Image 1: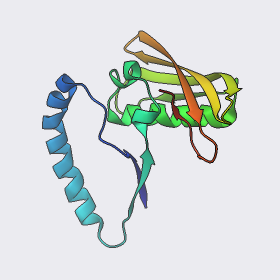
Image 2: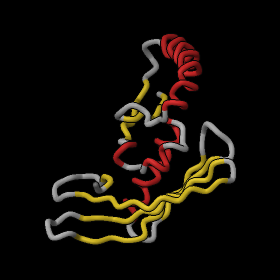
Image 3: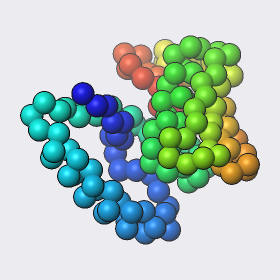
Image 4: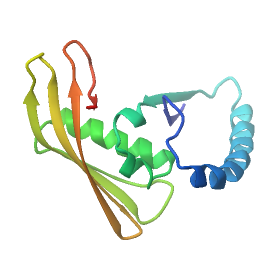
Length: 149
């Protein structure tokens, strides 16, 4: 059984990145399709839905490929689960010199019962650091946090 993270929505990309990746995606897709087809009845692929667009800021999404976006979103989820002061780091599985950290730096409750956290994302792509501060909230009765609008 193999596990392959996927997003619950299309990968967040700029137009230039979409054009560049379309060629590689077609090649990789045909290779993956062949590999999955040869796995037979004994092989299973499990997908993990990660709502990238509701967990990452545009500044971060623009600098990461699809798999890195999923890794960054998972780091955010892990940090939020740990509460204030918790950090979660990741290193790209697709590119060298790409990594990131999500750190929960604050938490507060709103009058309507919502719980909100402040998270600082730092990514490093080829030595260039990008920092993005985000506020995420969870309404009463909901299970997860999402970017506050």
